[in-house]
Length: 85
Image 1 (cartoon, rainbow, N blue to C red):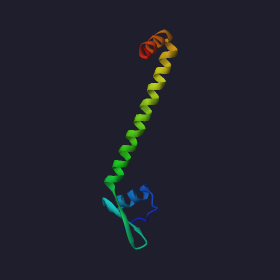
Image 2 (cartoon, one colour):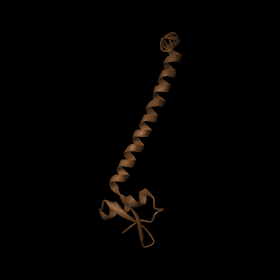
Image 3 (tube, helix red, strand yellow):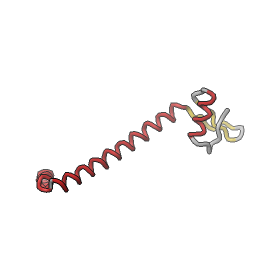
Image 4 (cartoon, rainbow, N blue to C red):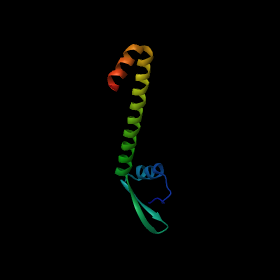
């Protein structure tokens, strides 16, 4: 059991799940060109999620600041004036 260099992560995970193994060799024809460890896939997913969560937090913060400025314009102006000085 192995995957080709162009295989998707989903395909590799499917094979690992079906065979109950933690990594797969990557073969280009008969030549071993790498391995796909389950751990690396999990790390990639977690790091990807962290990046997305950071972006979402920044968007939510920007929306919150915009809403506060719209609902409480005097306080928003005072906040910006304090911050800019």
